Amino acid sequence: MRDAFPGGGGRRYESAARFLGLPLIAIAQGPYAGEKVGRARGIIAIGDYPRGVIALGGAPVGVIAIGGMARGIVAWGGLSIGVFSFGGISVGGLAVGGVAIGLWAYGGVAAFILKGMGGTPIYIWPW
Image (cartoon, rainbow, N blue to C red; front, side):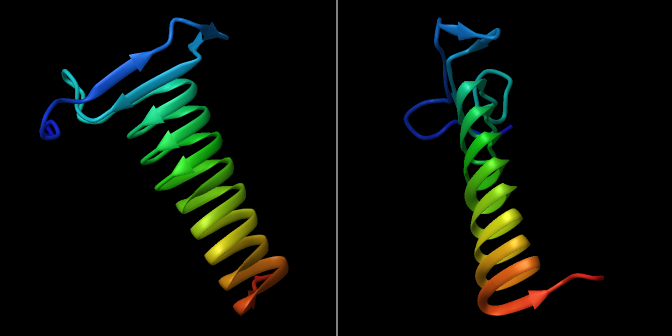
């Protein structure tokens, strides 16, 4: 199990307000009790591995995901996977980033099916 950060352990918070059974805001960062990482679940989720409509953190999954390894309909991150993805390595319908792979790809290296722009565009259709 991972040690707590210097000066304290992990943090947990869930708002009392709920929507569709989920807390409006959920925050779970760092190790806490028996957990090794923070797994926030809520409409707005913040943490190590957040899941929500809006997810912010290390490896977020949501409709809008922002973080290190983001997965969602709209994803921003170092590695982003989504319908609209933006980041260092982007994979999706519309992909924008250093390395972009998608239907429409724009980046330093752009691998695309329909349209691409970048330093090195690569047309990948048909296989």
